Image 1: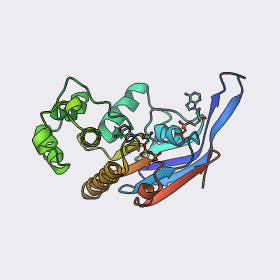
Image 2 (image 1 turned 90 degrees about the vertical axis):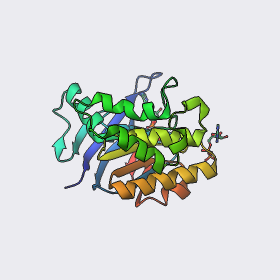
Image 3 (image 1 turned 135 degrees about the horizontal axis):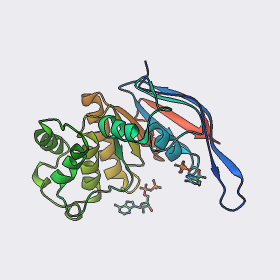
Image 4 (image 1 turned 30 degrees about the horizontal axis):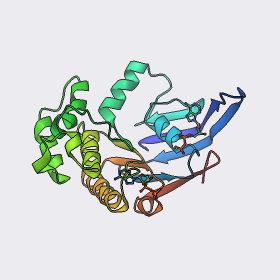
Length: 224
Ligand code: ADP
Ligand code: ADP
């Protein structure tokens, strides 16, 4: 059974000028297996983020069916969806969205507060993950004291802390130079492989997309 399955998913937006419905995703069929690494590529505005947000239950399809871990999302309340997100999905975006007043370590631990029962070893796990991404000496530093690449590493560890089944990454390297972007992709893939988590990443860096297990291209709202 795939971790995520989209069947005939479509999504439109209303054009604020004309009021017309503008299709963004059209008849998307997609199955992602647990443990896969998948890149989503395509020109700006082609619907990559919209697809990622539907995968992450942040946005809803207009038509079609989405299942996560065998469960249809259609019948779930907003509360159930929020619980599913905090337990099973980790997010990383182009901007790190770290809390400026909290240290790297505190930022990593924040998502554990959303769980009814945080894993008992959360602190140890946070320290170990920060060490694995090369931030052992900087875990008490605040975001402003870290480089762009280091901040994204903290954001990635924060996405992993609740041991999610799925990591969704929306242009995580988009604000980094080539060297730092390649280093972050290395880390994402190393930890993805060692933890077995499923990784879906939107990127416009073709070289980085090609390092993932599978590359999906969106063209005019259709998966190629
Ligand atoms: P990408 O991530 O590939 O750049 P997006 O998924 O962000 O593309 O957007 C796809 C299209 O949908 C764009 O034309 C964008 O303007 C439009 N769009 C995205 N979100 C909204 C929204 N909330 N309201 C109206 N239009 C939107
Ligand atoms: P490209 O579109 O060539 O792949 P990048 O994704 O590397 O470009 O960078 C996107 C934008 O972010 C560019 O305008 C670039 O100048 C800027 N940028 C790249 N690295 C940094 C950085 N470390 N800090 C701030 N802006 C950056």
